[in-house]
Every structure is written in C-alpha cells, then in structure tokens.
Length: 169
Figure 1 (cartoon, helix red, strand yellow):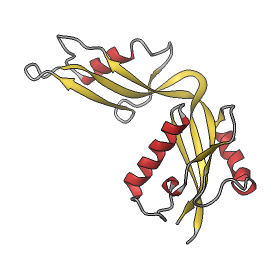
Figure 2 (figure 1 turned 180 degrees about the vertical axis):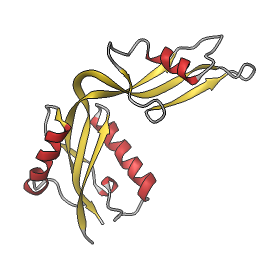
Figure 3 (figure 1 turned 45 degrees about the vertical axis):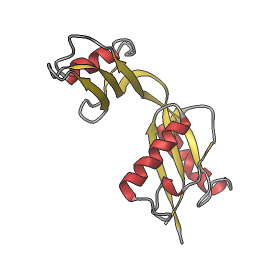
C-alpha cells in the first residue's frame, strides 16, 4: 500500500487531547480502515518543538521535516508542532442556577464570564460552541452543564497543534 502526506491543525494546548480529537474526527469522517489516508493511520505523535510558532511558519517548516526526519514515517509517528495563535479553545462549566437560563446564549455567557479575557469573543457562535446542557423538566430552562468554545481576539499564545506525516492509503 502507499502513503501520502497529510496536515491537520487542531485547537487545544494539550497535545494528547488534540491528537485524540484529530484521530477521532478522521475516523468519524473516513472510517476505521487501516489505509484510509488520514492521521488515524499513524501510531502516535512526536513533538518536534517546545516553542509555539505561527501556523504559516509551521506549515513552511513541516515540508522539510516530512522528508528530513526519519522518525516520521508511514504507520509510525506523525510530527507535532505547537501553534501560536490569537484563538484559544476552552471548556467551562455553566454555573448552576435554580431559575435557569432562557437561552443557550445566556448559558454560554454565564459560563464564559470567569474565563473570557478583554478583547476576546466567540469566533463563530454557530460553529464554535458545543456543550452539554441540563434542562429543568418543568420550565425547560438550562440549569447547568458545560460548554466548549473557540475564542478569538486574545493575545497570541499557544493555541493548538499542527500534526503532519505520512498517511497510509
């Protein structure tokens, strides 16, 4: 079987969590096949730098590393480079309240109140907000839960990981 190069950028500062989400997303979209041509055909990752860099710099750098680092091979480890960005992804609890929140937007706002920094905002409310909402049977209001949100507008910092390597196909 063959191999072709892949890149996958995932928000989140925990490399294991980001890798696991990238693999799970690839399996959900392309299946469990051993030769599906995605990150899911790799056997883990190898962190190649401790210093986050802008995404474009990592994309430029990965090309040389793909062919120049013998540790990155088909059915082996993929490379991982930390990315510097003004986006960040957080998971926050929705503060429990007896009265509840009438809308998911109110629940999200309450959850972010303790975490959001000046100048930050939700990148895309329809696409970048996921969560688990607990509702009251009687009032149908959200009374607790948690949300995961992508925020943008913060000071640049370690925001995610660029994974790259050789996918089995």
